[in-house]
Length: 486
Ligand SMILES: [Fe+2]
Image 1 (cartoon, protein in one colour):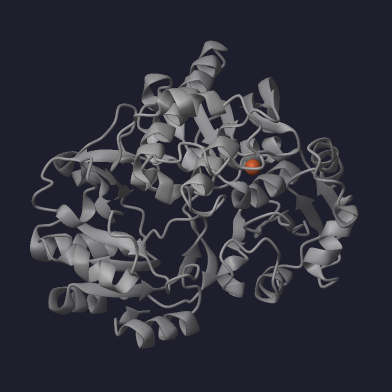
Image 2: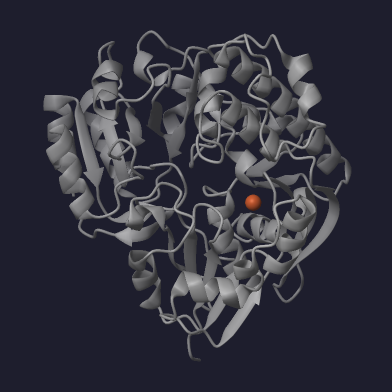
């Protein structure tokens, strides 16, 4: 049978991404436009990404939302109508520049694309799917019952929805804007800042939840408050709202398996309590809109997707350079790695990472000197999965955290200050025996040092997205004088 490749696209608004799957459910490619164009959260496709996906000769293109329906909401919201983005074909013509001419073009509901990216990559045959984001066409929260029928076709029943303007994601983005950070980009910094503040303003901030926050928050709101206190209060409010949704989702009684998607699913502080509502939890490593490129492709395909890992982007090739990395770690304590395929999703998981020995008190400052980022932000540990309980208290319902979806509490924070936040938590990546390069590296590091973990932060030049190809890695080496192994 002829292979019919499907190209899923999320583009035109923020963080454009592409996924290619074949008609056996294998993911052939998944990557972000920003890594090629070097524009953080690039909303449009760029030449490098289109060239990469064109090689797969996709016959079908699936778009992650319904442009016309979205335009009705934008019109309703007073944003006017964008006449260049009224139809999927218009958008694809702009994004693909005529370089890819598919036989078939499909488009799917925004929240359904999120749901499919989660459910069809999850290990479950039946699950409750919760999607929480800023906004799709009209929906801002949705709850789905998902299952496969006897023929293996994925079926979705929408159990509940919340519509614009009430939105947890817009709320959190507006708070991010209020404290001087970039909305729809730096929400993770707001989350990191929360641990430094006191939640003294939860009453004032929870009242905002009923406002339409699409245009942001009045800059005079809580004028005298410290940013960290606003962040801490917003975290309390956002968690309260998320758990209300989780309770509602659980009470439908559809399944004890939770698939959780949408940009809000990246809030790893809130995620630590999901085990109070569900027995098993799957959060795809790219739960935001970029992941919906995979979701749209999954809907066009209609069945379970074969999910192995998140290394799905540009391929630098070569063997994972375990021995060279170890040599540099032992000598310099810090080393970069750019090897194999780039990660799909916002986290570096070992293929585009800056790694360091997590032991000792001076390593955080050394890594910070390279990353030049806010001193209050912690770095994350990557650890052999079978050792995670010796070093961290994992939250209920989580025996692993393979894509850094949650925080745990470090048992010996004094020994590993570089990877522990001021509130005692760490955003953990656990690595199972999966044959990955980072797994071999950790095994060898453990055998040599008795320490089963490393500090892991994304390999990027300041202000730029993660390193993608070897040329980016070379630039990194020259700028910072840190070896990047391939
Ligand atoms: Fe979304």
